[in-house]
Image (tube, rainbow, N blue to C red; front, side, top):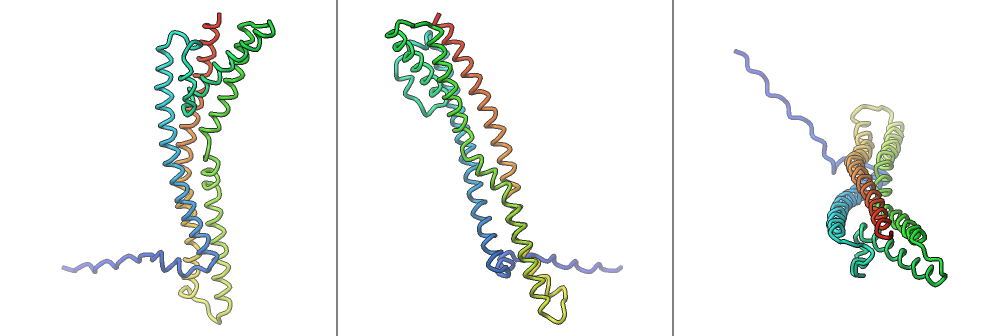
Length: 233
């Protein structure tokens, strides 16, 4: 009965050794990609928890408003919660409504239609402001998703040129002399992909969440405008 030979140990890649074999350009690009990775993860986790918190605050404020009989006669304490997107829209709309009423009354041209127009304009401005708030930091995350692979490719191309340049100075070129330089050059491509791939999934998830929240914000603004119109009659 023959005995099968023991399988050879798989060769492992020593990342630190490969990093030390890189030239200064490859090392700078690799370290820069590591920093971008930390920034990307910080943005993704921070943005996720921020959007989740804002959504919870919005729902609580909307439920509180739903229990009120009249929005126009609510105390000013309801207008001092600017950190909540729904409350910010409400405060701008109501303040603009009563400001228009006071000015038009002095001019003798006070009408409910004029008040509502000012309230709706204020709603649109507040809606645009809160949309920018939802989308904050997303452009930087998108830049990391797009730029990280190209930075990795730049490091690889530079490293390959350096490796072949070094081999050309020797009389004989073998795989043993070429392999270390090429493997060091490929390290930047691996680093770029390790940064871009998680960032891409995180960006798409956050983008979908942001779009849903903006749609909810627009629906809330429309419902708020309708309720103000009914109460002004």
